[in-house]
Length: 79
Image 1 (cartoon, rainbow, N blue to C red):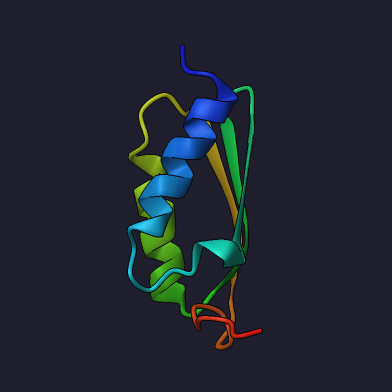
Image 2 (image 1 turned 90 degrees about the vertical axis):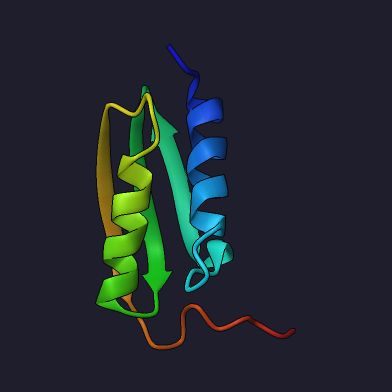
């Protein structure tokens, strides 16, 4: 059984590998193997890709996705 911290690290690493995703726009929470993704993505297609990628992580019990398509997301933020 993998720990929540291991699952979170795995999910975040996989999301970071998606070119259209700015990982800082997505919050990953894991509680007892249940992964919750929240935040913003640039399009519905990206949201689907994020969801599909997260589901591939071995050891997660279920996935809750509350990502909103937002044209501002996915752009690299300059501060």
